[in-house]
Image (cartoon, rainbow, N blue to C red; front, side, top):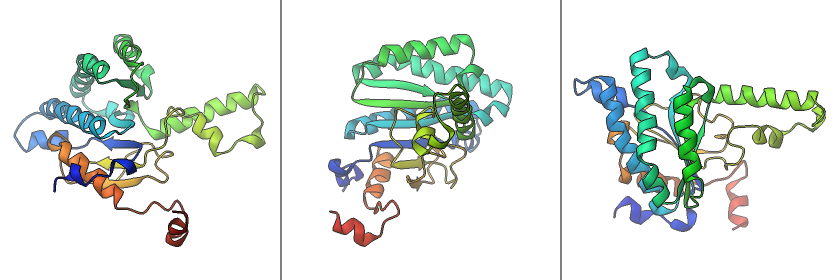
Length: 249
């Protein structure tokens, strides 16, 4: 039975996050430059978006470029940034057609004005989409995001808009870049690495983690469906006992 056929559409994770890892290794194994792997990775992005939309995932977050990635060689950073933005722009028509809205999160001030304008235009054009929200984490790191949230809360306290004693988990969640997005229920990472690499640290508190040996350019629809099917076999307890979960069914 195909993995897609194993999925219960009534028990889908509402939000799936993906760390797309392995482009460079995929290229090196073929004797090619890392940029070649990034180009092939774009195809995996398209397959993953299609797979998520086809089964009814409402939120899909893709970790495209971390703040740490700025430390890579300049030529790779430039090529990767141009590739990502061109790919997003080229897919705008498809996103609109499939009713998928785009949201970009991250330290966008580090991007060039041209890149920011192009991204903003795509977000505006796709905003009416209600089938699925595609979140691209670009120039993003969770420590940056949490630091920014702390600064916003500090300013709110200083200006008297919030009292220090009223700060709680909801306050912090509302100050994050994902304030209007539910926390992921499933996080997928490719390439065999078993870490979350400064990605959605606050939001992943109760997320189910799924790791696959597949390098990102080889990741296909069936791999996505396999991860969702695996997720559906797990018991989500949120700190409760199995007995409590069973009793509440």
